[in-house]
Length: 425
Image (cartoon, rainbow, N blue to C red; front, side, top):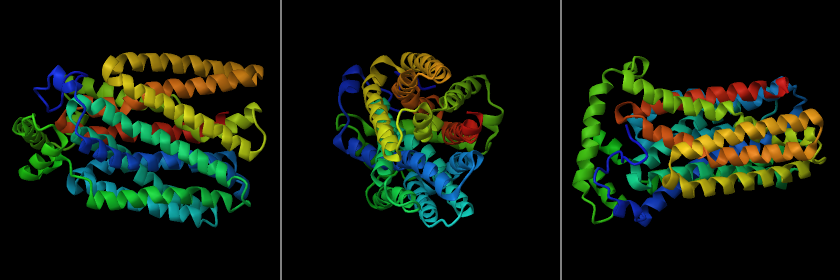
């Protein structure tokens, strides 16, 4: 089991080496991979405005709006479930390409929708792409990055998601005053640049995962990438042998299919409880619904009146969320996952209670303080820690399938919360 101080493959990492920054190439590769996360975040952020305006334009009920918001997470669960198939057979880079092509197809269907049926079909495509992409992003970065810097670099994915959410909120604000039926179509169009760039870069620039290359018997290519992603003083033969050993162990388990996950031994069972439990807990907090329904929450609290003011308020929410993630990235490798996770969950519980009290007593300021605190504590802890922890806790022989299972249950939980959020409220 990989712990906070135990590298997955970099067995001889010393404190001195762990303190050195990785080569610039690693930052470049991780930065390109996080474009995928920006795209995911943009869809989450822009959906908060698109859903509100589509409800007004197409006269949807709260259940139909909940279906619009929740269906994308349900299909993301399907995409997550199948992501290991694409990752293991196509490789990480081509899986990035495939997910972005499907993502663009869903976006095109949405902006050309004439009725609610086509809107839901568009969410099927987009949701499936999001599910595949969510599983591949942290997996790819954790496999390319040196173990001693995996915490910071994997957290870049969560920072990118929140930056994408902020961009989506901004697009809502910019186009809010356009005529009805035009505004919600223009909002998602802005997000087409990211997937297009990701397709080009994944085909031309991004290196394949060394682990996948070793599994395919392409050791020379894997060693070349390891030389690029590690300092010259590090012995790439040791790194390569470590990956080979893990690949051999993985091959032994490949014939068993899903049996190691469905009938795990005692040690693997605890790993799955931790990894999958954190993935489910992340969404039980209701974070996705609070983000996508944030305009409705602000409106119900009576904080603002016009659509433009609503979307401006969500931009402020996005800024706070992104800043807290950036702060968290600075402390993850220093203080470890567990302390920040416990602090985050305690803060979330306190702030959700504060929001409830604010709504019950009709105090707008209390609602706003509780909501902003909730977003901050989530972004400081369980938000970035969730996928970092899952990418570290699962052993290599089940990692791809276990990540798929964790992401699937994460998305199903989010879909359930999103579908029932408005009717229950």
